[in-house]
Length: 208
Ligand code: HEM
Image 1 (cartoon, rainbow, N blue to C red):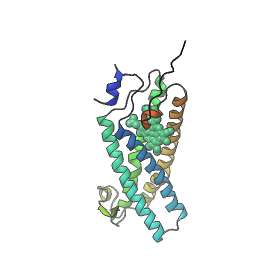
Image 2: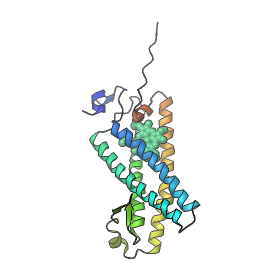
Image 3: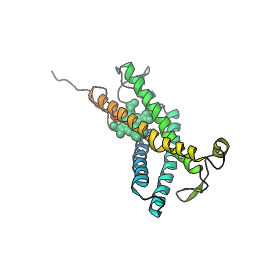
Image 4: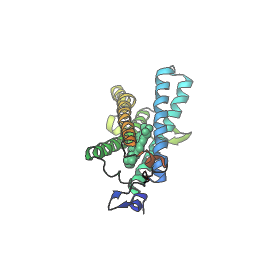
């Protein structure tokens, strides 16, 4: 039985359930990796001079971390399907439930799209791809879809989507996500502990 099933009565949260441990660990590991990847991507593209050994070294770390993120996101989706999240706190307005569900769904799409567009970019070149020093395949279908060699304009477009469009959308979604988590934390529907694994707040006991 999942944590949510064990603690919910008729699908209504009793208020003391949280995400399973694997979901909590993967949530924070992936969040950390995404922050690190945004920082590394900026550093290698904007700070380090082009075509230098230092840039190549950082790029190889960025690629390996990106592929690691992709594997962890696939594991996260597997955990999500096996253990649905606990029911949201009772009394949360419908629009907030819908918005939170939409933001989570968008996150899953972005968490897949970011590493996949990165993998597509390196697969458009002829250089072999290394995953922490091990050989990693090129993304299948690239030559069939875009031709070989891939036109410069297509590479440029995919790079723009990866380094600009997706990053801005994930940062905006993150702002919404964190604002929602903090709002609920202080408006009587705390949710932060559900994803941190901390103890749930106990209802205040009023003494006569
Ligand atoms: C890039 C970073 C992040 C990503 C990609 C991310 C993604 C997600 C996703 C997809 C879920 C939904 C899990 C599910 O139901 O399957 C979730 C839940 C949650 N996240 Fe994040 N998150 C990030 C950062 C943060 C941060 C910084 C906070 C803290 C303020 C946070 C707080 C929460 C909370 C409280 C929940 C549980 C909401 C609930 O109880 O329904 N997240 N996150």
